[in-house]
Structure formats: C-alpha cells, structure tokens
Amino acid sequence: MKTFHFYDRGSDRPWINPMLTNAVIVGHTTATSTKLWLRAYQENSYRMVICPEPLLGNDEVATDWNPKTTVRQGKEVFSLKNIHNGDTREIANAVLTDKANLEFQHDITNVWEIDGLKPGQRYYYAAFALNLKVRKTPWEIVPDNKVNRFRTQNGSQESMTFGLFSCHMPYKKNSFDLVNIHMWDRFGDELEQRNGEFILGVGDQVYVDGNSNVSIWEWLKKIRKEFMQKVKPEDRVEVMRSWYRDIYRGYWGHRQLRNVFSRFPTYMMWDDHEILDGWGSYSAKEKKNLLDSWWDWGDDDEKLLLLNQMYEAAKLTYDEYEHSHNPSTPADQFDYPFTWGKSAFYVLDMRGQRDYTRETKDRILGQAQMQRFKDWLGSDAVKNAESIFVVSPVPVVHAKSFAVNYLDILNVADDMRDEWEHESNWVERDVLLDAIFAAAKANDKSLYLLSGDVHIGAAFRMTHKQYPDTRVYQLTSSAITYDLPWAKASALALVVNNHGQLQRDKDDSEPNVAFQLLMEPCKTNNFALINVQRNDQGKTEVHWDLYGSAEERATVTKLERLVLT
Image (tube, rainbow, N blue to C red; front, side):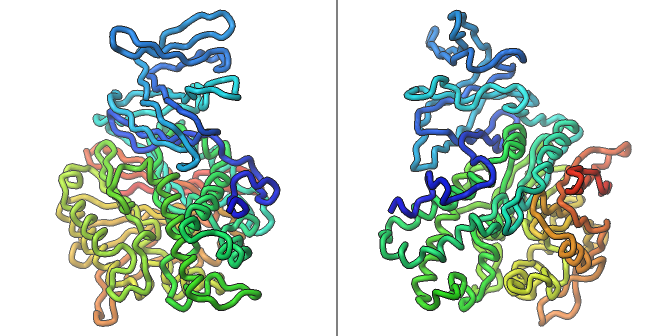
C-alpha cells in the first residue's frame, strides 16, 4: 500500500517549490478569542504561546532561547531560558495552549481555540515541541515579530478593512514554471499598510488538477487498475487523502502565501478545484467518463466508486486544512456565518451539496443550507449590522450562460452548469436573490455579494423590481495567481455582461432582477481590499479597491476604486 502514498516520494512527485512542512494559519478571530492552526514538521507533542508583547527583541534569535514552563502558586508561568548563560526571562501575560499530540493520522496538524484575549490587541505567538528527539531546538514556529502575529477584533471601530482573493494556482498549466507569486507579497503589504483585519479566501485555494505534473486525477487514471488490485477497499480513502494533502502542502509551500496566512485571520471556502474541476456539474453519463483515458475504457461502476471515494478524501482534507480554522459548524456542514465589527457575513458552500442530477430544483445549495441562510438573513446579527456580506464562491452575475468559458470547449458543459446563470439553476438562484433583496429592504441596508472563480475582476449593481430602492452589489476578485493567457483573458472579459436582466424559469416571462457592470473587467491577476466606514453624513460606505498585476514587470497597481452605498 505504501507504493500509492505520496509521503516522501522524492523525485516521483516533483514540486518546483519547497513543500509546506511547518506553518501556522490564523483562523476565526473574535474580540476575545482566536483559532490557530498548526502543521508541524514531525510527530510530537506541541504547545503554543500567545503574548501581547514580542517574545524576542529585534536583535535576538530564537535558537538562543528555549521555552520553559513552571508552576507558581497553582498558575503556569512561561519563561525563556538562554542556552548560553542560563539567564531566565519571564514573559508576562503569556497565554499557553493545552498540549496536543500531532500525528500523521491528522497530517501532523491541530487547531487550538484560545480564549481570554483582549479586544483590539495585537498578539504574538510561537509553537514549541515538548519531547525533543533529534532536533536541537524545541521551537517549531519560531518567535518572529514581523510574521507570527495577529490582532483581535475591536468592536468599537468606525472603519474596517479586509482582503478578498481566490484561485491560487501559481504554476503554468503544463510546464510547471512558477508565476505570479509576487501577488502574495503585495497583498500582504497592502493589508499591512491599510490596517487590514482579516481575509476571505472564496474558493480554489489549491488546484488538485491544475498542473499536469502533479494532478492527482491524472495519477489516479495512471494507476487505477493496480490501485484497485492492491489497496483494500477500507484503505482507499486514506491513501487518497495523502494525495490531497500533497496538493495542499505543495500549493501552500510558498513563503509569500504563508506570511499572509500567519498574520491575518483567514476565512476560507472551497470550490471545485479543491475536489475536481466542475465537481457536481456533470450528468450521470459524463461522470462515468471522467476517469476514462485512451488506453482504459469501461468499468463504469468501479470508476463511480473511485469518484465517490475521491470526493470523501477531498472533503476530509478540506476540513483538515481549511474548514477546521473557520467558525465551528456541525459535522458535514461547511457553510457558516460570522460577524466582524459592525458587519455580518455568511459564507455559502456551493460544492458540498451540488448535484446537477438532483431532480428537485435546489441543485447548488440544497434545501437545508438555503433554510440556514434564510434564518440568518432574519437573525439579530443581520438586523444589528451596519453592512451585510454574503460569499457566493461562483458569481451570481457574470456572463451569459451560453458564453461562459466559451473558449474552453472541452469542458464547456460543466463550466456552464457551474454558473448561477445556467437555466438549471434559475429557480434556486431566484429564491436566493428574492431572500437577499427582501432582507436588504427589511433592514434598509445595501447587501454585498463576494465571489471568485471566473478569473476576471468585476463589480455589478443589481436591482429588483419588487424593491426598486434597494441595492445589492456583486464584487468579484479572481484570480490571485492563476496563469491565464492574455488572449483567453481578453475573450472572457468580452463575454462579461455590461447590463441586462436575469432570465427566470421557462414558466415565467418577466425577469425580476436587472444588473449593470460598474467597471471595466479586470483581465490580469488581482486581489481586492474592501473598506467599510461611515461617511460625513453618517451613512455606511463600502470602498472596493481592486489591485491588478503586470507579470512581465512583477508589479501590482490599484486598478479601480468604487464607493458603494
């Protein structure tokens, strides 16, 4: 069975960049708590220390100091001990997590939820091992005053800025050359300079099938028969998890990305490329053909079984690497709400329940998630918010359904069905938009949809004939690193709708929702910063700043600023 694992496969599993070994992601953060996700280098017992002051001076190095814990009057005290002269420095106000055993069973990862923090406070953190065996230093994540820090929410603030990104695929599709990684440096710099508080990753944080050199679906095609013969049915999902974990460790191995995730609370939601391109948008016949190759046809039942096992592995790995540091949800639920300052957010899961073959007309979100979302729209969190944001990883408004990804003719069917604009999704989309507009009207507020997926940056305003004075905006940022050829990007920009009306189900003739494009579509790699503040008249404004890349100069410029109310 080890033959099929991706652990320590060396040259058989080439990556152009070093893979993620040890890292921290700052997750869901409130005024008094945070989640810290750790991936360690090796199995061991670990703790984390969080402190409102830097653990080390700027001219000190972590390897000169070892962490030390003692108990004094029933209270645990954290200190640093100098390995050269034995001096001990007590760290006041340090918060220590419980011990956790990080094992390969969970890919040497763990999430701690830390309570008892103070609002609006910057905290510094580090991680250390308890049972050293080979390594000389116990530090797993060394104290670093520039990188390993975050800030809790400040509920009294009058202004809030957060980042938005999607589609991290920093490799050319076939050649495996590294591209656009400078976008992460600029993203972090802009967030730092503008006091950014958190970021939203709204889909395709990795690509399991993006580059042919490391596509795990190409790997499955290659070894399918041998895999079925040699791997026991009860072991297959666990082996497949090693493939998905390999993708995360490769795509997140870049220092530039880790430096952002380690400084700003990061909220994530998956899209298809965390599973398989177009997942949930295939007909039954198309699904059976997904694992076909020119040398290997037939065995439909076997291939469907493998597809379902791959999805289970994808779901478990997404939970392990992304969802575990989001706000907590019940088992098998990935959609979630949260609040930040005076803004309310709901992040929709458009992949976990998606099924194009479902007979009922709720093929994307499903009935249970739609009801949770409607309940949230009527909740006190929304009523008390000054601004309302909803993450829809795939944009509600983008291009006409017949033109979506027109140039990608080999995959046009699933790409079209992925879109809210496809006729198979019109009924569910109208239910979603009717609920959104009704809530915005009831609360006398604008509502903002945040999206990625389409490799175009764009902004739209939507209106509803039943609520003519209510505004809903769609803001899309995609892609932060994906290498899209200029010709194809230009073609995608051409099919973006400038204005129009959203068609309804065939039984209805009169559209309810009209839309208008507010900016020239961005055809380059991009990310967005969104600021919420009150203007001089006391009205809440949302400022949308889109930053785009020029790869040949490795530069990033602010392309567009929109002020939305």
